[in-house]
Image (tube, rainbow, N blue to C red; front, side, top):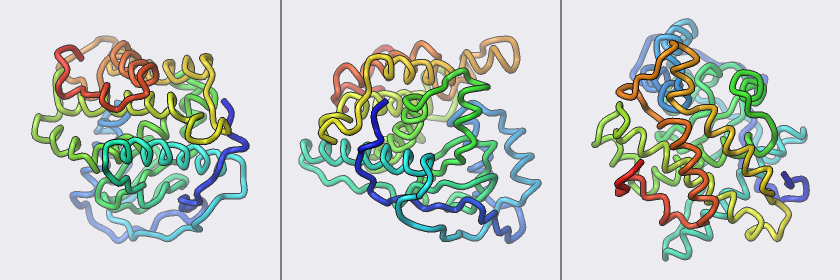
Amino acid sequence: MRWQGGEGGGNIEDRRGLGAVATGGMGIGGVVLALAGYFFFGIDPSTTMGVVNSVSPQAQQQEGARGTPADEAGRFVDVVSTNVDQVWTLKFKEAGQTYRPPDSIVIYDQATGTGCGMGQSAMGPFYCPADRKVYLDLSFWQELETKFGAGGEAARAYVIAHEIGHHVQNLTGASERAQRMGAKGAESGSVRLELQADCYAGVWAANASAVSGGQVALDPRDIEDGLRAAAAVGDDTLQRRSQGQVMPDAFTHGSSEQRMRWFRKGAQSGDPGACDTFGADRL
C-alpha cells in the first residue's frame, strides 16, 4: 500500500503513555463500551465487561498531544484517516452536503476515557458517537495479524476506514435507524450498519488515489488484504473459533462472506449509493 508521501491532517490526539484517570462507579458509558467490543469485533461482552469493571468505566477525558505524531505508526494513522476524510468530503460535496470529520482520531494504549465511558484495548477499535471520536489502541495491529490472520498496512487501513464509516453513519442518521431496527440477528440493524461500514471502507479504497494525487493508493493485492481483514472478523468465523458452532441469531456484523461482498461492492463501485444495506433485499 502506498501512503508514505500522503498528506497528514494532524487530526490525531495522541494519548499513548497517559494511562486512564478513573473516577469510580459503573455507569451507562461502561455498559456501552463493554458492548462495543461485541458490536464491533465480536468479542464476548462478559469478557469486556470484566475488563471494564476491573478498571472502572467512568474516566475523565484526557487531552493528548494533537497533531501529526512523529513515529511511523502514528503517521500512518494520520495519513490514512486524512485520506478517508478527503474521500468523504468529496462524496458529501457531490451529494450537495458538507462533511464534518471526526473530532479526532485518538490513539492510546491499554485504557482511556471517552465520551462513551472507559475505553479498553480489549474492545478493539471503536467509534464513540457521543464525542465523535475514533479510538485506536495500536497494539490491535499485532492482534489483527496474529489472531485474525489479517496482516499488512491495507488491512489496518481497512479498520480505520470502517470506523470512520461509522462516523459517516452518525452524520447521515443511519446509526439511529439501526438502533430502531434492533441489535441482534442476521437481519438486524446492527448487521446492516456494520456491512454498510464495510462497504464504505471499500468506497474509500476506490477513491483513495484520486483525492490524493496518487500519494495514497491501493493495488489489487491491497484490496485482497482488505478482504481478508473483513473475512477474519465475520460473525460465523469468530463464533466458530470461540464456540465451535455458528449461531446466526446472535450475529451483529454479518458473515465473512457478507463482509467481503459488501467491502468489494464499495471498492468496485466507489459509490456510497451502492452501500444501501438497509434497503437491500439480500444482505
